[in-house]
Image (cartoon, rainbow, N blue to C red; front, side, top):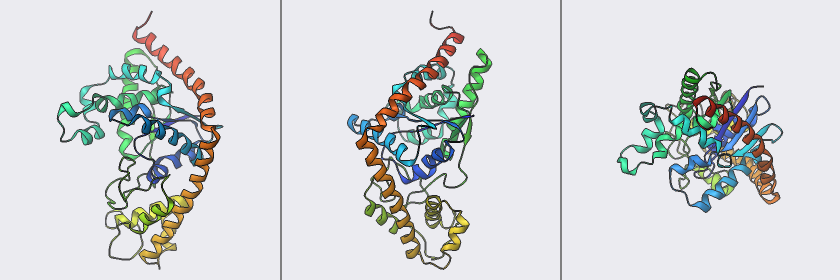
Length: 328
């Protein structure tokens, strides 16, 4: 069975966009792959986080993973920082990365734009090497990612091939998997911009743990257009198209079917249906989340996973260190 690996960074609150674009995909694929899913907490350190808030978000993401349907029978769930072999391998990969390729990473260019070098964290520049280490450490065959993260998997592929050419076959070369529909959910107030968990003050973002009535109001106030016809056209009708993707994803039906259901509806009726679907989903997820938090189940699952991932990672790093000539 092929191995899948992916993770979520605990910066900001987890959004409906994270669920539709990533978490839902993890759940759907977990029985078809040997799945490794983690909380990428070391990646959160490229910016300042209040330590108590960061610790809470890490716990929340683990519980949300489980509430969304990740099953420990099929998925190995762990926290990145609890396995320090990630940082061991990251340093080796940094030393095999080039300044040019790291500087071309889209997220680095976007987040460093307009800032002087003194204001840019070194971690923001080098974290794609850590992301590559996350992937290559476990010999992942596939990595489900959003469109905006594909570039990082390409870097992991390049580094794997570069290392294998220098030192002999060591790493599997991973493949990115990008969902055809629902890969990117957009901000409800600005449907040209991705719904982001780091933008949690926005009226355009729905958080998985937010008040349900608040989420419904956000759907009802979502930006649309003046045509009052419901069909998918991302370029000319981005707001309505975004709501169509949300509804079709939560319902598990094709966009064409949703268009047929609402072909005679007005925008108000359509928004109300989307809001009710979102409310139903959030209510179910939040009830599961609360039960998991109260039971202490997450800690037990993490403890059982830690030994498994440590053994895999230790073997890989020992092989790497032996090949590059460090240690005794």
